[in-house]
Length: 472
Image (cartoon, rainbow, N blue to C red; front, side):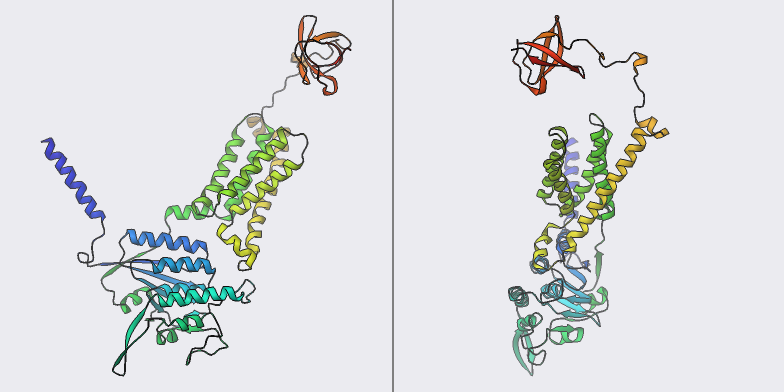
């Protein structure tokens, strides 16, 4: 009987495994279409979105992927990463130009197996420009021309029947692709040597850079001959929405205030308590979402931690506030700032492809948050540590120990100045001295070293410590 039970469980697990596998094209009649949008600047975030969506489409066994695009361009490297993933994807990728596929967007559009454009849409103008709109040096243009040409060539040639004769033509003409980048490229009947090429929807269809026109994804699928399908449209998951909220600059500013406030109040109180917990929670909620989003580099977290260590050393080890403290503050600010910046974009700031404001905005958020936190800490510290309120009585120890109640820390005048004793331990400069068979805390006068078992005279009695001078 037990054997049949285990056979039943094995059969049930096998059925589950089969059900989890995507059905083959021969078995499944309903096609699965996965749709995701690219409606922003082509930045590393678009690369991460493309990676995620293509992996999910593959996991779901999608038969087709449709990219709904509307972009004015972005970074060439990011566009190259997206187009490479599209070219290497095993299933057909259709691209719907839902208004614009300009500059870097045109490179991504060329990578798709088929392109449809909305009436009034345009595609092209792929010259590499800086933030001021001027063309970058020729090495950038050469790289972009090469990618556009190689992407067009990747689709190979197709037969074309003209006048009863069959000829082979490029599916997408590499020379036309280059003309989208370089105004010196001449395509007879299309563009002269003074203009960068930008296609309208009708022109793109005529020159075989688009398969047709469509007003929606559904019409695109109908034009492509895809029938009996179900569409899965990418929607941010609950985790995506939570990460989006946690990486919002306003929320990050609050976390910075918690970090700074927690550190400040922890330094005002002995031991580790609630302020430490607040600082740790603020740190985790600040850095963890950035790490999960792929924006945080290890060196940024290390710089932040080193900054905290330097500040602690300045406060507890070295007197006053000097180089270590200043370096610590700078390191903390830099760590918090660069954590908010997508590290992949930093190298584009020096070339002018990304505006310097991209760095200044996070720096402004950090500085404002740190300053606001310190001001709030000073106000709260004055109100709850020295002021009077019901909340202060609940969170601060306000009881006092007065001399009248019998509480004394030490005798105010022990009458020991001028007397002689013997050092029970070496004074380095602190130690013990034996006086009238009683042991006292002692220290060398002016911090001088006094070996053990030496006769000393007491020159001062302050703070419960006997300050001694060796008798020669």
